[in-house]
Length: 525
Ligand SMILES: *[C@@H]1O[C@H](CO)[C@@H](O)[C@H](O)[C@H]1NC(C)=O
Ligand SMILES: *[C@@H]1O[C@H](CO)[C@@H](O)[C@H](O)[C@H]1NC(C)=O
Ligand SMILES: *[C@@H]1O[C@H](CO)[C@@H](O)[C@H](O)[C@H]1NC(C)=O
Ligand SMILES: *[C@@H]1O[C@H](CO)[C@@H](O)[C@H](O)[C@H]1NC(C)=O
Ligand SMILES: *[C@@H]1O[C@H](CO)[C@@H](O)[C@H](O)[C@H]1NC(C)=O
Ligand SMILES: *[C@@H]1O[C@H](CO)[C@@H](O)[C@H](O)[C@H]1NC(C)=O
Ligand SMILES: *[C@@H]1O[C@H](CO)[C@@H](O)[C@H](O)[C@H]1NC(C)=O
Ligand SMILES: *[C@@H]1O[C@H](CO)[C@@H](O)[C@H](O)[C@H]1NC(C)=O
Ligand SMILES: *[C@@H]1O[C@H](CO)[C@@H](O)[C@H](O)[C@H]1NC(C)=O
Ligand SMILES: *[C@@H]1O[C@H](CO)[C@@H](O)[C@H](O)[C@H]1NC(C)=O
Ligand SMILES: *[C@@H]1O[C@H](CO)[C@@H](O)[C@H](O)[C@H]1NC(C)=O
Image (cartoon, rainbow, N blue to C red; front, side, top):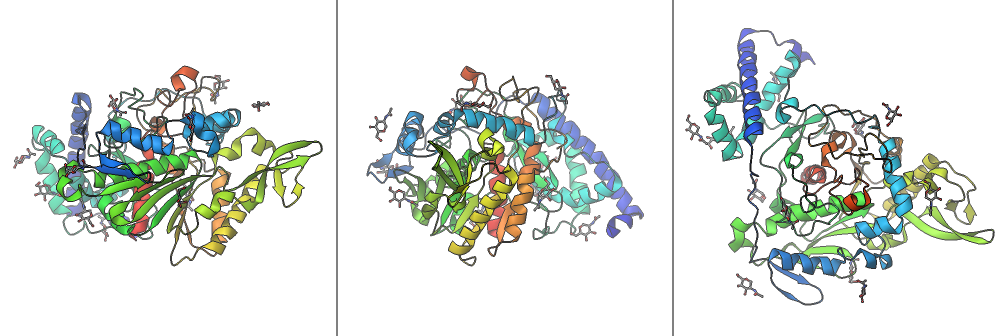
């Protein structure tokens, strides 16, 4: 980088010096905040008297959060996993129970494949924020300076932080200096062409964007706080790309972008994780207690039998469809027996419901690691032929090509935006899913991400490149790899009873919110 080498004349040195001083002060401040922090900063609302929720079955009215939760959950059958059998993937739990054996193997092997399968080493405890603000070299300092404006804005976001800063005296002065020095340099950073995968997690008190109370939709399996998780830091990190800023999620703006449209998530339970996150983030606009008079007429409705929520005032829907493989899970005869097969040449039969969507977010990953898919014996089917044995990578590629041609055939790129989310890492440590593997000890992100980028992601990238439709690859693997602290661990559903930790899914609020901020950013462009 040329401009960084030219960094030698005096004023800039001064700048760097003052920045170094101020970053040390920031460090101290964060340390202070970290040490003295005692109460959650987000006020947790308990009632939203003016939100009307209506289901298609006709009841409507104003509810307390609990009534709201019950009504939504009952409508969606979210809370009745035992009833899930009729609707594939109707609930996370149903999902897991239905194919418990495969699922557990899947989770376990995903963990092993996720690349972070070294044994759990003791997490270094230190001030969380500064680890990711650390400055290594003058080159980086330089870049850092350009970022300071953004940081200041960030710090400004909460009065509490400002007060914190004021308390340590002189801090503000230091910050101000940088504000002034970098004035004119702090322009809007280029977003187009920015590599969002390169960056760091920045501790940000103004997060999360919603709470377990403001969002009654959070599935039990993702509701870590509801299940007793006490630490809160994991909700307060924001992904900061190196070369650009991700705008804070703006639910009002997002709903405007989605007016009259269908946003559809299709994939495994991790996509359901992301869909729920999106719902929660959008509901905050509809249910913002400070804007009650503007918003009290807005409603969200839910259709029975599918996960299609409609934001009435914007005539848009946010939908989720379970599809573990994107291709069709069928049955075929092998000798005397009827066996389960995977039709890698045929799109999931539920696909008719995805058609007509305006924004689609696909994923498939975890289920390709369960023992049947991995062994590939008498499992993969094309037309009438069942492959006696087929290697999982070949099968995965063929399945994605099937998906790709289906997308190319059914969507007009000028009308529909298609995303494919890369695989989300698991973080089992000190064992496997069934041998005491855990992630419970983690309350802070990892300091380094072992960047093992799975073969599945590479295959997905290759398939996407061959498609006619321009598919955006939502590349969240690397950034999520840092976030060992973001899993439900023992605060998932039944985890404590079964003793099996969930180090595959993600707590909400949590990491999928960051994925959705990236999605938001792409939609803004
Ligand atoms: C809901 O609350 C609003 C304002 O508090 C009120 O005007 C409206 O009548 C209520 N609706 C029902 C169905 O109770
Ligand atoms: C399952 O759902 C049906 C109707 O959809 C209902 O009649 C039945 O009671 C439910 N069973 C359980 C165990 O919830
Ligand atoms: C469960 O998974 C193991 C492999 O881990 C396999 O040997 C066994 O047959 C499976 N059991 C059932 C009931 O599918
Ligand atoms: C991880 O721990 C197991 C015992 O729990 C040990 O056998 C294995 O060698 C360890 N692996 C690494 C990479 O340290
Ligand atoms: C800061 O970024 C601008 C472009 O946004 C660039 O022109 C300038 O050289 C950068 N300054 C430093 C000190 O890196
Ligand atoms: C920080 O907030 C103060 C007052 O709230 C404002 O004057 C200042 O411009 C803000 N600075 C930044 C960088 O946003
Ligand atoms: C911080 O201190 C400055 C003056 O030193 C004051 O103007 C400002 O209001 C203070 N901000 C907060 C949030 O206390
Ligand atoms: C929300 O989280 C708090 C802990 O922060 C917990 O006490 C409460 O039960 C949770 N509420 C719900 C509805 O999950
Ligand atoms: C969010 O977007 C709306 C509509 O575009 C805008 O009016 C509002 O100022 C935005 N809010 C923030 C905090 O940027
Ligand atoms: C959701 O289910 C309802 C009722 O079964 C149906 O009318 C509606 O078309 C479905 N929505 C989608 C997007 O499939
Ligand atoms: C996705 O991110 C990883 C790093 O996390 C990187 O190695 C890979 O090249 C990226 N892929 C794309 C298509 O951007």
